[in-house]
Image (cartoon, rainbow, N blue to C red; front, side, top):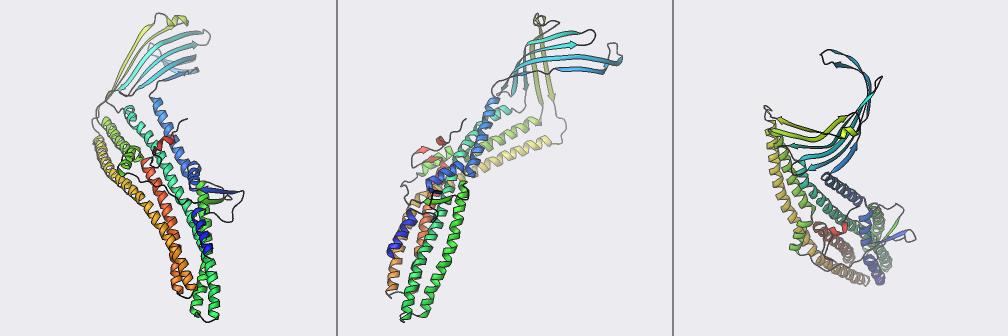
Length: 492
């Protein structure tokens, strides 16, 4: 019996597996395998990659807005209709229109981020054909035209985008790295959930074998009158309880297998074997270094900065809408008309156009002033929340690092507790078989042994969850001394 216990203990700790499913269709997974598969194909990881790709495309689109754009356009039209027209002498009548227009325009446009204006360089050519009994045509060319539009005191979206868009992209990169580590932390939890379920099943099988042996032995002692009927009934009750426990633990094990399959996005007919390693790395995380790295690499810090800038941007927008508004449009160019195409590019005439738009609010019943006040209040509220969030963030980092640094000791204590409880059970069983102990002492030893098994698996699971929680907060691998963010470059 002692040899059976030792073999089962070794199976639970070092080679926990889904018994009965070994074969060609079985997937054997270590914790590292589960983490790798989760980061590749789990729904959470897929969603994180899609989110990051969207952020990258958005950032690329923003950068494209700061570059010049070149476009070629044309809008030919044919007009055969009767229209109501006013003649030069002031009389009005219906006239038949029969014409065709063709044009071609090449435009180069550049946004000016520091002013919020737009400057354009264009070249245009158009032709008007009068159809009918006396057909004719005319060309109109604009070889060169420069235009500039500018709001004199309006909201400059280019300037604010230049501040916020790089932060948005940095936050997305850091969020992706953080999410991958959180997926790893969840993967360890699901992995050890299956390990724990298998541990419970192995414990139940072990206890069932032990209680069956003890009941058979107790029945013999009862027949010769060395134990009471009450004690024999207790042995029988232990055996029945273990039979029920095996059924319950088997169902829990099947549920844990299904949960791991779903988490890894595996088919329902995939058999899984998990291989648990009870070794852990031996290192501690310096709090000051972790705090500095968390400030540098956590997306939470970027989110706080982005919230502040967005609030300041909203305030600037409502201020620009509250008072005097003006904009200007300038256009300079060269143009000519002629009946023949070459002639339309000779003796070009200067063209200048200047227009100014002015808007002065007179009566709005305080709406603009109210919007500005709301934006100011929101900015102050954002600053206050950022201060609170920063304090909360520092506490989270401090608490997580402290818990991780203590967890290695917790694992060692749990290991020694398990070994001691196992030895106590063997002693208690030997004493009971020899008639020097009661069934209550034996039941207490069994309970302590089972609890110690569970505690050790739980301590291992907690260690790895905290390990990846520290990585998610700092984007740093303290075991290998490297930044995690360097491993999530995205660019296609």
